Image (cartoon, rainbow, N blue to C red; front, side):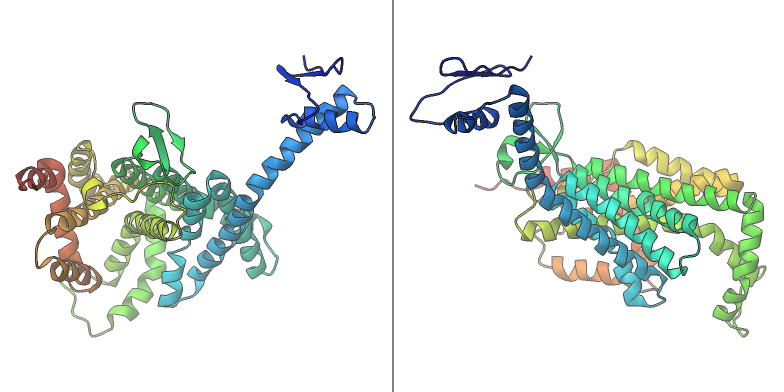
Length: 409
């Protein structure tokens, strides 16, 4: 029971016993309020003093959390504006739209959970508002669905991955907490990049599966959806390949359209993984340069890994998916493609690590990145990186190089 007694020179308040002297003022907010009241020869009601203390603490809390929430709201608006550029059919607009998770991640990494959550909520509301305005204020349900789509496909994955990046615990402890203070890195251990990449892979595979299931239910079945969508995009495929194009036997524009429809969900899942991991890296760099990153910069080339169980899942899904057929087969293919992209990212980290100390490191890395950009050669370099990632997960190539490296005196 909270009670304040003014007998003598002692105040009693919620388990605190504060002795008032003439030469100093008590530190507790409620007792200070009562002390000031006594000095003015006013009566101090215990309930009024308690509410005054609560009001003071709430005011301090709002002063501390208000700037972070304001930053998060601004970041959410920026993310929504970037996402709205996806409707423009230009390359710069597409590039900027792929950076839509970046403001949310920067808010989360640099200013904490309040800023990150505020960014997601603000982005959802802004996306709904922009969609509602573009539809000339006609369909409110569709606008709300657009906001929810952004939250589940971009907002929450960006918030979760950036939150994992700043999770830490005291060495020897089992309790993970969100790190908000810059410094004291030596006394803490941080969430490993292996866990972050694993979560990102699972999230992106879930996004691809959700798209496949939603489209199938929207058209009343998987086969019907594939048939109708293939018929809709077949004219565009014919215009793209041209009338004089020589296609292999048993392959026509309708077959290419069907293959494009079936490849859409796996492609979205794989590209989402690359987009989220690139935005997370870029957000970390920006936050680090601003001095707000509450953790040391990790050695990505060494720490980025995948559990070995993913090798079995990738092998099984790659072998079963193409022959299963139907919606279950497509789901298995989505899992296989997402894991393949994850192993490609792992292979890229392996290339960076194995080329350390080499005089040809910069030219070789430049060739790899250029090969991934050029439309003719990207599939070859991507498959090479997948193989490198699989070999490292199975044979620990980086550990072998680390053990064979000569010790520095």
